[in-house]
Length: 176
Image (cartoon, rainbow, N blue to C red; front, top):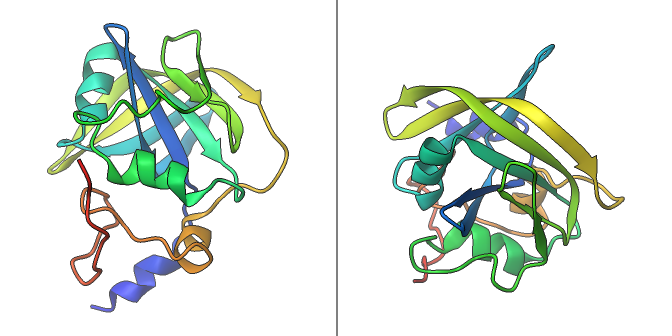
C-alpha cells in the first residue's frame, strides 16, 4: 500500500478547545469536517489518550478555532505537541470563553465555531464526536492553514496521537 496517497487528502488545521470545571484545554486537529448544513453538523476525531478527549466526553461541548497560515509554529507546537495534563495551554494564549464555556483562540485564527456534542462513535484508538453548531464568528482576515501547508511550508510533523500519524515519520520529541 502506498500511504503517500493519503497525503493527497485535504485537511484544515484547527485548535479544538474545551472547558471542564473551570479548566481549559485544547489541541490541534486536522480531522474536522462539516457533516450537514441543515441542521449544521460538524464532526471531529480525537485520540482517546488526549486530555481533550475526556473533557469533550464529559462536558459535551467544544470550540473550533480555524488557524491562519500566519499562525506561528510555537502556537501549533503548544497545542499539538504538549500534553494537556502537563501544560496549561491557554495561560499565555489570547482567548475568550464561548457561550458553551469552551475557549476560543483569538490570535492567528480566522474564525471560531461553537459545537454541542449530540453523538459519538468509537473508532478503536479515537472517538468521532458529532456535534451541532451553536454559534460561529469571524475573527481575522487571511488564508486558512491546511495540513499540506503545515507539512510542506512550515515543515511540520504529525504527532504520534494524530489519526493521520504513520510510523514511518520521525516526530519531534513530545515535551512535558
